[in-house]
Amino acid sequence: MTTDEILYARFSLQRSNFHLDAELSIPNHGVTGVFGHSGSGKTTLLRCLAGLERSDRGQLRVDGIHWQDGSKGLFMPAYQRPIGMVFQEARLFPHLTVLENIRYGIKRKRTESKPVDLDHVIEVLAIEHLLNRKPDKLSGGEQQRGAIARALLTGPKLLLMDEPLSALDGACKAEFMPFLQRLHNELLTPIIYVTHSLGEITQLADHLVLMENGKTIASSPLDTMLARLDLPLAREEDAVTVINGVVSGIDRQYGLAQVETAIGILYVEAQGLSDHSQLKVHIHARDVSLSLKQPESSSTLNIVEARISEIAECTPTQVNVMLMADDTPLLSRVTRLSCDRLDLQPGMKVYAQIKSISLKRSF
Amino acid sequence: MMEIPGLGPFLLTLKLAGVTIMVLLILGTPLAWWLARTRSRLKMPMEAIVALPLVLPPTVIGFYLLIVLGPQGFIGGPWMSLTGSALTFTFTGLVVASVLYSLPFVVQPLQNAFESIGDAPLEAAWVSGARPLDAFFTVAVPLARRGYITAAVLGFAHTLGEFGVILMVGGNIPGETRVISIAIYDHVETMAYSEAHAMSAILLVFSFIVLLGVYTTNRRWRPL
Image 1: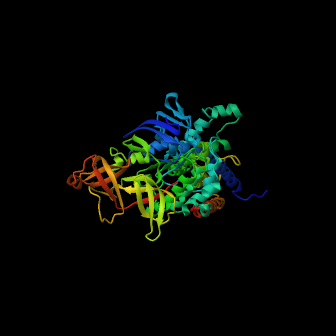
Image 2: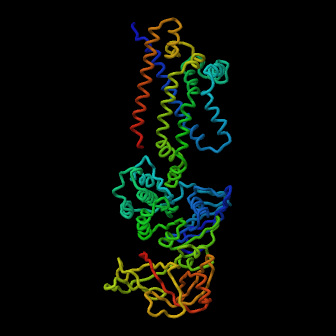
């Protein structure tokens, strides 16, 4: 147990063709992503935390208080747990307006709940103009924002989100992400965010719990987790390295910003950035190519000197190469053919050419 | 004293249907809720019992009720010693009989309505801090509103049209058990066709107006 832990849980649950065997510990700040493919037990785990699923053998302690203790037969029912839950579908009550939905939760605040400012939540989620409408008059994204407001305004100690974007189409998803990022930024409620999208995880999460076949297989800060080749994360199609950075200069003439990071200075699009702003740099493994010699006269701006620390097969045609640039891991994915032609080996010095970088404003 | 023909039996019928539907909604709600949500093995036998009045001839129900509610019956007996009067051939007895007879018409629509709500809104209510009973009244009942309207109308209308069971259990006592269907039968038996016409017309027009009113309001309520 770490000192900043808000939640410790251990569940064992047997369903007809599924066995959940999960253990996790969640920090009391930021977003903890629970990542796994469908059927891995993420949603069941979340339902156990909410008290909607009852495991006979289970332990759940939140903020020092036992919500569930199988050995003592203790089980706090869902309606007593100071949590907010956002489901895949918004589940707003169809017979109530958005505001009435929100009030429904406020009226039933649990005793241990924290105070939350209604106006602030309404502003962050931009739902002021929707308050007097019934849910069936709203788009999927608007409904989901209403549902988040309802969950947040019960003053939860923890906000549980079960793939809140999965019912939204692509455009809605992109539109929705900034709201989630603002939530994370401005409201201090710790969030447990379940998803099967690595993109959502890397954009939102600080901490990551990995699930496979009903088991929690790893749990640690996001950047550490992304740097482990032994986890299935690195084998995802859009495997990524996330690095913190600070803007240290902006070149107006070319529209580029200099970002200081642990792997050196990187150039990124300056659009929307200002000096000294903090951000997270996302580098997709497939955008990192390797060269044994310092590339001269290359069009690639971002070239980083690094040492190979580990190589692992990813697909029959591709390998993952973990690089260490000044003790900071950077993942590269190259074809097995290139790997053999260059005779890449752990310990070798290489130059990583980063073809593109995406950014996320840091909080 | 001049009386409008059929008014007495007509009012008695309304009273019987009104009381019956009240009792049925109160008793039918927990029963329908249980049937909609239980995983018990008793569910199917219970459903079959609830549906029995749909298939049994009213005379069969009436016959058993006559025995059970009679002064020697296992409900009528205790009732007799408790209140001093029998259950058979009384208004109260008719209510008991009507409740049984119209049970499926109330329980089935309610059960369907509760089933179609599903777990999702209830879970949303629980995680919002609503206790199960609170969630039931603030979420399940409003969402089952159409089921309640259907149940109330069907139960009421079915009680209006009741005949066989009443004849068996209630007889034909003016002001007590002489409901309109019995009165019509009586008039036809005694060849008093004009009275039979008047009463039948009242019932026909009234039933039509009730159903029309319900269907129009129901339409207006559709965008829930």
